[in-house]
Image (cartoon, rainbow, N blue to C red; front, side, top):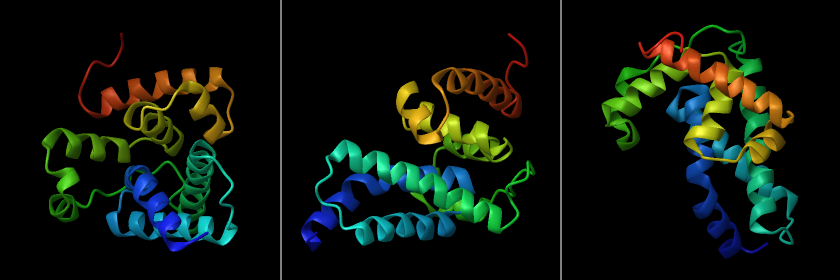
Length: 163
């Protein structure tokens, strides 16, 4: 795999992986580090014979594994809300919109499985099938968890509690 191929793959897929990491770990610098780790592992595999779809699937699955390894190591895997980093949110253009900032903070209060299914389905707009593959769940579990996650997110954001 040459430098040009690596740079193109990074340019194409890193924004999505970084967004996922940022929403999941709730810390910009950690998300940057974990995103880099995903791509370092990809380069180490040296597999240039994959299609873009296969590369993207591999990166997403690896990102999930790396993020949860990090959360376990830091003992943040428990269902304890993350502390929002208000100062850091303002520094990054992604968080300039009040709606995004509110979503980010509310997501941080959800348990990791809820946070993750919302990120993949609603923010990254993956299909149910793609989400199920990344999470190693069946499609029905994705649907049910997403429904519960959206209800919990609405509650966190001060919306309707029951429909």
